[in-house]
Image (tube, rainbow, N blue to C red; front, side, top):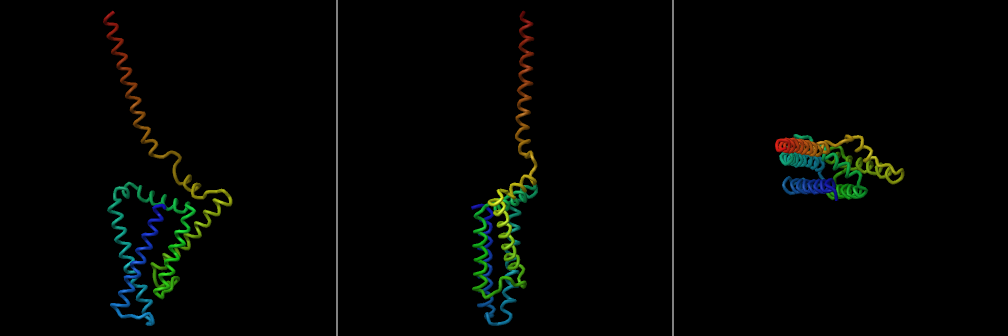
Length: 199
């Protein structure tokens, strides 16, 4: 299971928790039944509000935990590579199907429409999941039918031919070899000068 799979599971658990919390607030505390016309509007608005709060808390938490990587530019590159690895994994489409099925079941039990445009969060989750499934189908189709890995082609185009880490790792070796040569030459000069003074 990749990190993107874990992220999808965390997103699903967070979304379910928000929906259950909003349902309890609307039905028990606000006394709005599912038969009332304002039930759907209230549910959609509160789901967007509390989901926005959860997303804001998550962004702040991620920023403070990865502030150094974000400043160096490594954080977004790492997240993008994790997303590409997620697309390249043939089993990831099963995870997305389960995620989308869980969202459908949640909306069904809450008596809400998944494809409604009244909720921004629900629309983004629903349409984003379908788009992700289509992307995975295209990637797997080219990989297993035409033997063309689109993700590898994109990564070869995206990443430079020589990694910066290679240059950094080679630099100390070059400096060390130069120091060794310098020490050896100075030792040879001292040896031959001492030998000439004796004879």
